[in-house]
Image (cartoon, rainbow, N blue to C red; front, side, top):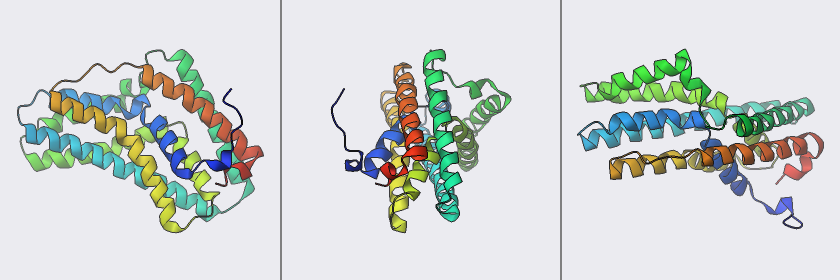
Length: 241
């Protein structure tokens, strides 16, 4: 359709931008923030609104960075064991199939986790700490909740962070570059949350967020994950950027 493409001409940074952006639009990465914003908008203390929301987003970024760094170090420790690459390739294929299934079946792009007992517990926790009179207890509670929420989000990401870290291990990089590319990934993973939060805080209203972007990310993410999975299993040299 678009002509001949030289895969080796694409950088790891470009891949980090694409995969991080797609991962960030998964509904489980967004529903908690949207609910938190609705609670914050009922408050009259602008400073408290900005701090609590900012702490939640920053903590989420830190947790996701730690999660991806842990995967990276595990994969680097295992080295170039063939079955590990095959296993991650299978994860990529499964994640791609899941994303495509979500695109065709989950029309409203809702997060299934939000209706579980864990999801209800997160909602109750947000209500408790947002309206907590003691400011520092509220901040601490939001940090704890952000940690637990992002552990759930990691399960909803359909293996995208794991696949990206595996691609990093296939490239001959210095130590700081591994973490630099993870930082790029995490930044674009959090970028949509950051934009939504800033708009809501400056306009003092939660603008209507359609599901078309989330559904599109499922479609693109599914296609890209399947292609990466096939490459990882049959043509790993294509991923050695």
